[in-house]
Amino acid sequence: MKNWLTKGLGFCALVVLSLTSACKKDETQAVLTPGAAPTLQASTTTPNLALTTANINASAVTFTYSAANFGYPAAATYTLQFDKKGGNFASPVTFTGGTAAGATSLTTAQLVNIFSSLGYPFSSASQVDVRVVASVGAAAAPSTSPVVTLTGTPVPLCIPNTFGGNWGIVGPAAGGWPGATPTDRMLTYDCYTQTFTLRTALTAGALKFRANQDWGTNLGGPSTSLATGATLALNGPDLNITTPGTYTITLTIKTDASGAVSGGSVTIKP
Image (cartoon, rainbow, N blue to C red; front, side, top):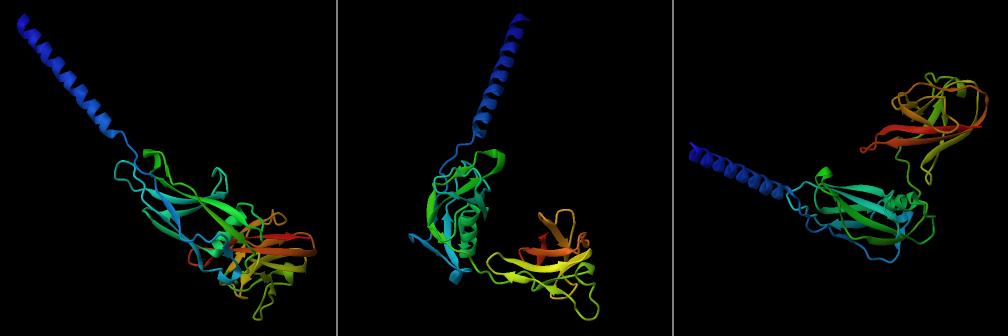
């Protein structure tokens, strides 16, 4: 009996050791071993990019990036990040590059907006650092390319009106709701700020914005923050002017990826 128990206990110990060894092997196999980081190249080495209205919609630069190696087959997301020269990318301007190695082209208008968003003044040569970051979520730390530096002199761009047409105001605050004959007070489009403005006298009452003197596309919203900026929605509620006076109206239109009007914002100040 003793001999049998000894052999049995020895067999059990061998099984435990085998299982422990197998677990350790499995654990070792699950550890990720990241390989090469993505590379990044810019299509132009021009010392100073021409960021002017003349080539506003043309491709200014194309960024090409290689795939990151995370040590296992992974569907990574690639993001281009932009920051001031010498910055640390703490609050970068970003563009999604997709889920595979490839290329992303940016137009002159997009680059001007990047320089402006980073706080650079117009008509002054400035430098921007660019990198691509590959991420697979929580499975591994992001993989980052070396930095590429661009130099450009952005200027204010005169962007044509692609914001749903011509915009006007209607309602009792602006003389009454329109009947068969349009009574819209039309706003003026500023191609440099991409806003619609009007300085006009308003009475106490309701107010709405509509495009092309038609109710097919109209905007409304809350009236509580008109002086500081109110968010507008398609077919939103009437705005309300409580104090008669002469006001400056500044309307900003938002569009979706298809170019259709999706909303906007407005300030109405004395």
